[in-house]
Image 1 (cartoon, rainbow, N blue to C red):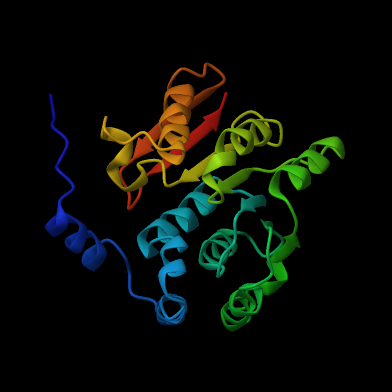
Image 2: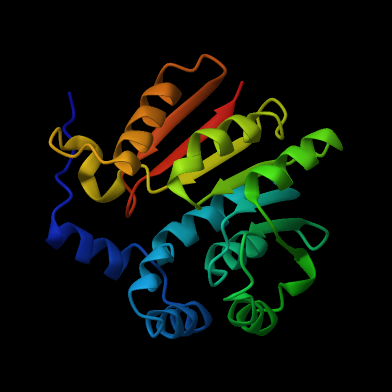
Length: 218
């Protein structure tokens, strides 16, 4: 039986060094986001974004949905993975960082593939269900208390073989710490168990950065 390599500080530094191909636009976006202070921790890791781009490409996703935009790095990576006629709709409850996101979308020539919606994620997703919208791939990286709701709504927005990817599913490692019982940790811990036992899907929980749950609807 193979063993899981412990994800320690040295391994993380190695992954950040060789697990991501250097990219000026992405580096500049990450650097400008870092200037925002503590809120910058909401940005995905570059290596996660690279993974999103590859999955979008190899799944031939043509229509994508994102819940939680922040400064638009994940949006940019997914848009890169789309064909010229592909589209990603990005939902966020605030336009506070939208101008920063658009600056880099324009710089990377992917803006034509992106539609940004400002609104409550649950309400917008339910409206999409009511209007019989469908997506090939959905990426969730928003308020953790609503992760279970976003998951269920997503299952109604993708067909068989559709993909859901959820960020922060290891939650700084707190999900594995029995002494951590705050509401956000418990929500993510419970969702991991729900996905594990959900016969509607196949899944893999990946220790990439803060943890990605990679889900395929049967």
